Length: 119
Image (cartoon, rainbow, N blue to C red):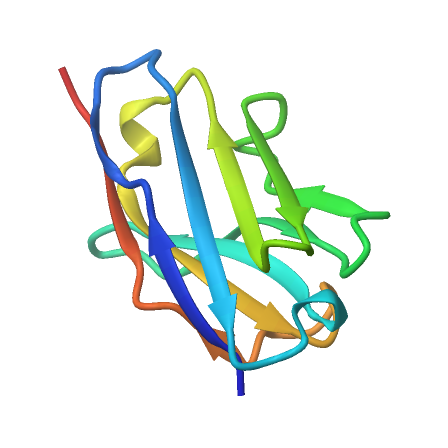
């Protein structure tokens, strides 16, 4: 089973940017669909963005369209989430996940990285 480790979270002011990274090991990265989810305090975990194994298809939550970009580098076994124009409502723990398809629930999860948007 693939192991996932997120990095890049932190505190940023509204309107700022962050880039999250997720390094994978222990599996064949290029066969996995990859996703980013987030969970804010008191809320359910929600899908933020997903990308198919060869980057042919991406999908985004409506709340982040035009601000966030998911990408992956199969040679580095890493998936990224570029977050621009961050808003306080983007504050959450962000989780990287892997699965067989972006249309199915993931079956591997990272431990999460905190993103806080505040002035």
